Amino acid sequence: MSNNFKALSLSYKNAPVEIRELLSLDEASMQALLIKLKEFFNVSEAMILSTCNRSEIYYSHNLDLSDELIKLLISEKGITGADQYKAYFEILTKEQEAILHLYRVAMGLEAQVIGDMQISNQVKRAYQMSADLQLAGPFLHRLLHTIFFTNKRVVQETSFRDGAASVSYAAVELIEVLTKEIKNPRVLIIGVGEIGTDVCRNMVNIPQASVKITNRTQATAEALAQECGYEVVPFENILDAIQEADVIVSSIMKNEPFITKEIVANLEILSFKFFIDLSVPRSIETAIEEVPGALLYNVDNIQSKASEALERRIAAIPAVEQIVRESIEEFNDWKKEMMVSPTINKFKNALEQIRQEELARYLKNATDKEAKIIDKVTKSMMQKIIKMPVIQLKAACKRGDAENLIDLLSDLFDLENQKENH
Image 1: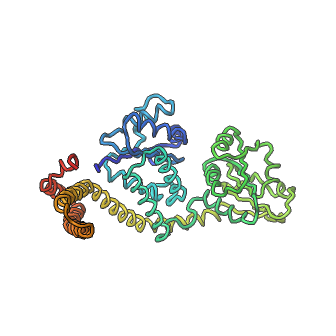
Image 2 (image 1 turned 60 degrees about the vertical axis):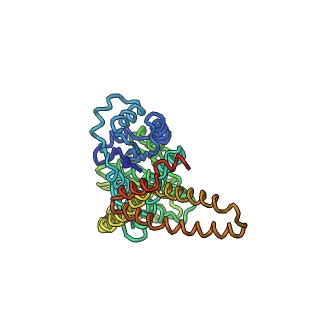
Image 3 (image 1 turned 30 degrees about the vertical axis):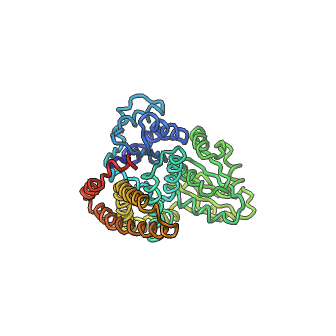
C-alpha cells in the first residue's frame, strides 16, 4: 500500500467568502466531480467535502493531480482562468500531512468555530457518497472509520464539544430550550447578515421548527431561503410576521431600536413571545419586557455563554491533539501491516501447497481416521511454523524495516513465483 494519499483544500483560512461561494459544490457537483476523478484520472479512492467554510478533495494517486483537479473544479463551476484561483488552495501532497489535515478538519480543530459539531456529520455524508460511488477502498474505509472512532473518544474524554462556542449556534440552542414545549415552533429571523445567515443554517438542528426569514434586500433572503428550505416574508409585511411568530431573532444593523415597546404592546400575546436580539447596536428596545408575555434575550447573554464554551474548548485542544496523534499512530501501524499482508498470504499459500502435495503422496493407503489425524497434525505444525515469521514481519513493520525480511522470505520460498504456481 503506497504512500499516495493527497489533499486539496480551499478554506476560510486562505480564501475570502466570495471565492468560497464561487467555488462551493452542491451534492450533484460533488458526484459529477468524483465520477470524473474515477473515469479521467483512474483514481481508485477519493472523497469531496464541501461546507460553507471549505471545499476539499482527498484522493489516492501516485501522481500529484493538484493542477488538473483545480482546473476540473473551475470548469465544473463554469469559470475560466483557473490559474488565478490556484493561490487560494492549500496543496498537501505528503500522505501524513493529508491524513493529519483530514483528522483536524473532522475533529473541528480547523473550524472557524473551534469544535464545530456539524463537521463530523458533513464528513460522514462525504464518505457515504464516496462509498456509494465505489470510490472508498480499504485505505479510505479504514481511515474514515478510525476518524469516526476518534471523534467518539474526543466527545467522551474531553470538553472539546461542550456548549455552543459561537453566538449564532448559542442562539439556536437557546431557541431549542425556549420552544421545547411548543409542538411546531414558529421562528422569524430578521436580517440575514453574517450572524443571521449562521442562525438560519444552524436552525437545521431544530427540524420541527417552521422558519421564516426577512431582509431589506429580498434577493439575499430568497437565496438563503432556497439553500435552507425556508419561507421568505417581504420586509414590508414584517409586523404581521412578528405577530405570527413564537420566536423573533433580530440581527439587523440600525442605529436605533427597530422593534419598540410600542410595536410589541400592539401585539396579541396569548402566552409568551420570545425576542432574541443579536444586533450591535441593539435593534430591540429593552422596554419591551414591560409588556406582559414578552421576554427579551440580548447578544451579551448569549455571547457570555459562547465565550465560556469557547474557553473550555480551547483548553481541551492539547488533549484532542494527543488523541489524534494516538489514532494516527494506530492507523499507520495498520497501514504498515497491510504492506506485508500479501507476503504473509503468499507464505501461507506456499506452505499449504507443500502440505497438500505431501499429503497426496503419503495418504494413498491411509484410512479415513488416519487421514484426519495426519491432516490435523500437519495443519497444527504449519500454523506453528508460520507464527514466528508473521510476528517478526509485523514487528519489523512497526520499526520500518520489513523490507529485508520480505526479501528473505521471498527468496527462501520463491514467493514471487508462488502466486503463479499456486
